[in-house]
Length: 174
Image (spheres, rainbow, N blue to C red):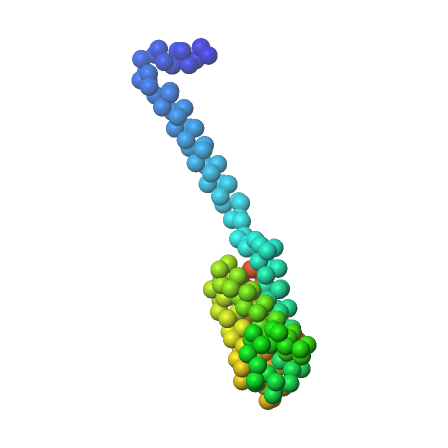
């Protein structure tokens, strides 16, 4: 402590030099530590945390779409051409009734997704829903072409969902 007192009282250095050098030393130390820390620590990788409720909604929509797809393939197309949605919900035909319920369920879940899902997921959802409902209105004459187009629309939706969740796209089976 004597050396600090002597330095402050001597005529060789101004009285403010010691506090100034201490402050400069502290600031240089802080900057050096920060600079060293940022260089040695990598930035955290951004990951998209997925909402379990959103995942559940996606799965429910895909399940309803699959039920509608299966019902479209099984339902009598002459009966389908004559019935509207309200009549189909009250129908005695179990396949027609199942198709109508699936369409109503898909519509409800699609509305949910329109509110909470990202844009690409909504676009793919609307495309799949539109394809399924158009197929019920127009009927299906070529079941193989219908299945291929349905699987393409469904794959596009799954791809959009996986991308929105920050997951890797699925590789097609060979």
